[in-house]
Image (cartoon, rainbow, N blue to C red; front, side):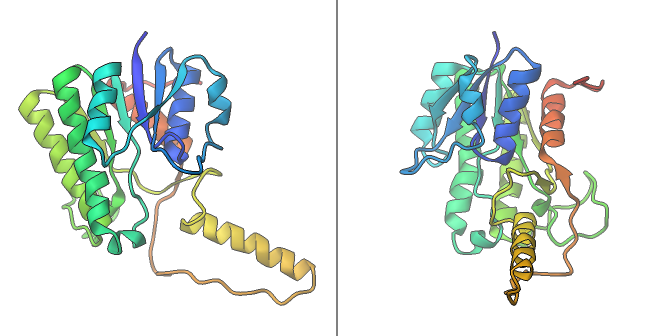
Amino acid sequence: MKKAIVTGVTGQVGSYMAEFLLKYTDVEVYGAIRRLSVPNHKHIEHLKLDPRFHLIEMDLGDEHSINTCIEEIKPDYFMNFAANSFVGLSWKMPVNHFQNNTMGVLHQLEAIRKHCPNCRYYNAGSSEEFGDVVYSPQDLNHPSRPRSPYGASKVAARQIVKVWRDSYNLFAIQGYLFNHESERRGEEFVTRKITMNVARIKKQLAEGKKPEYFELGNLEAKRDWSHSEDFVRAVWLCSNNINQKIIY
C-alpha cells in the first residue's frame, strides 16, 4: 500500500486532502501535526476512525523531526500544506515565516532526497507570489513580485523546489494556490470575518439592537475564490500527472 504524508492536516486544505485520499484512493495517510498545548482536531475527528489514517508529529521548524518522520515512513507522496499563511502577521514575524515556509521545505526535500527519492512532493504556493501584479489574470509567465514577507517566503520556497528538482531529479512541484474557501476556513481570514460579522449584525437587528461595525482592510483588493475540495483534487492530479477527469 502506498503512503502519503500530509502536513497541515488539521487545517482547511490539509484536512480535505486527507479526506480525499481516504475516500478516493487506497493510499495510507499520515497526517502531520505540530504539538500544541490545546489540540485543534475538529476538522479531522471523523478521519481518526479510518484504520488507514495515522497522526504523526512533525514541526516545520525542526529539521530533526522532519528527517525522522520521512526516514521512518518513506512516503510515496508528500503534500505540504503546513505554513504560516496569514499575510498580515508576516510583517510582525518575518523570520518565523521564512523558517517555516521556506526552510521547512528545504528540510523536507533534503530528507526525501536521502531516504525516498522516488517520493512525489507537492508544496502549496500562493497567489501572493505575484504580489504587485503586472496583468490579470496571471499565468505561469507572470514575474514574481511579492509585496509581503509571506509572499517572499513562498517565492523562495518555489526556487528551492526547482533547484532540488533540477539538481537531484526529484518529482517536486509547487502550485500557485489562489484563495480557496470552505466552512473550515480560519476565522481570521476575510471570508469568515465577513460571514461571521454579517450573522452577528443580523442577530443584533433581530433583537432590536444597534449593530456594531467591523473593520476590513483594502476594499480595492480583488481575489479569485474557489472551494478547497476542488483544490485538493487538483493537487492529486498534479501529483500523478493525470490529465483525465476523476469521477467521484
